[in-house]
Image 1 (cartoon, protein in one colour):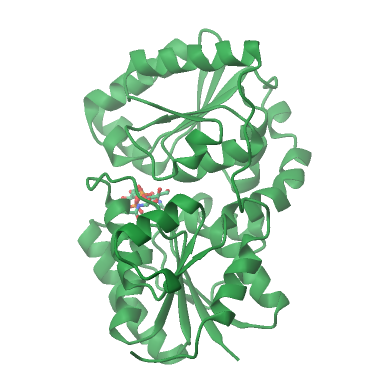
Image 2: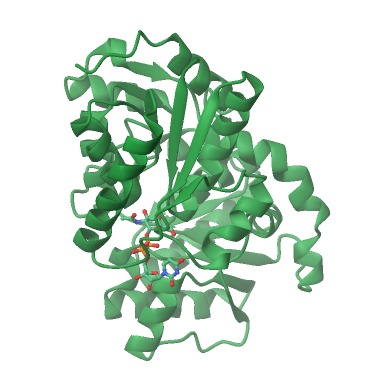
Length: 368
Ligand code: UD1
């Protein structure tokens, strides 16, 4: 029997690992769950384990925050003895966070096979720490499991052999489809006094948006502008909260509600009934596409192009004027009916099963 060791560390990993762990459980596969502790606040970690029904981690490395070098190094040092102890056949890493590349690098040097879930995505923006993590993780992985066909094309163009690449679809959509009903039943918008389609849900945390004072000031001014027509629900990431305090910035309008980071079910419940979402998150670009909610992504590029070509996503510059124009375009399209979203291929709730199938079907374990 194959022994699989799954690595999670930061908020966006948890909803990707949950359906793969569940599919492994259904097949009787032995799974070990390692949490690096990259995210550690209750709202950023534990609440997701509860909402997603994840089993408690078998190991927690407790690495916490730090510079990229500090965090990556601490994860590597903590992960090496864990690998020695558990001797898995495969290490499964998810997405593009520092935990992903750190554990892939340790596993590669130990000759343990690596499967990368969400392989092949490219923003072609080398200034994004996640892009560095994606490209290098894909270079190390033995099995590259892609969420969309553009991922396959990107990997082939980089010279990755086709036999290592498997299109499996989007595992995060498995989680969304299975928990959407529970999220709705919580009635979060109503309990916050929000009317469906009368509010915008906002998240902003990318260093490129929040670490620069002028950019953050522009985005907060855009929220003030928006709050004339809509209530603004802004779930503030810890990084963003720290930067707002450091720069002495805050929205001026009382119709901008600053919320603590939300749990998974609360987030999905709020997104589903929002008039639109303004974000720089990767996951929300995908979730809005599946839920059919218009999304404005405050970034110059996206590694998830199908959310634009097939879904509800539009890119806008991180300026007050561009966000204002984007919101006006969304509201205009809604009035005229706009083009409805199509769900991209493989975003069907079965991707976790296909991940496990692909790993089980991969050749015998070697230490090549
Ligand atoms: C990380 C990921 C990013 C992902 C994001 C989701 C990398 C390179 N970045 O960015 O891809 O979109 O998670 O949230 O891996 N903090 C807390 N509590 C926590 C975690 C963080 O207060 O539980 C604060 C710390 O002050 C920390 C800051 O947030 O310095 C940033 O956290 P960090 O994990 O370094 O990066 P994120 O910005 O969260």
